[in-house]
Image (cartoon, rainbow, N blue to C red):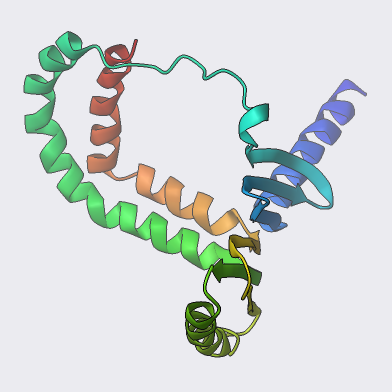
Length: 205
């Protein structure tokens, strides 16, 4: 009985891992400016389950006190570098093609669903605004020819103004990224580089 329960638990864990790797994450990034206030939101969902919902840019009046930033211990850094550099530089050069493989795999794993850009602007002068607006409209016509991309421009001929919004929705599948990363970790230069970089942990205060 215990073995059956353990097998079921292992099976469930395996299915969850497979689901995480195969089922895409839906990512939405929204940035906008209204009434001279900048705001931004990041949302990540998986199987309609909300994983992340974070406000990236908050209005100034709502900003909390800045957190203490970690600093370099220069003395420790100078002690570590002479021994590290002769090993790190050759390893980094050898590892670079493998890191490029990870970047290419990441780009292949991303699927853009929709990009929307709305711009409202005014230069304070109707003639200048109309001229620049015509230029933006020409650019918008070219951009809108790209599938799933929408760019709109609204000139304000009376006021000096700059507002708008940017929204991008994409899907991300982790299977390709994870498979490539595991393959890269089997390479000796990459493992050696990561091992040497661990020595930098003591450099931060």
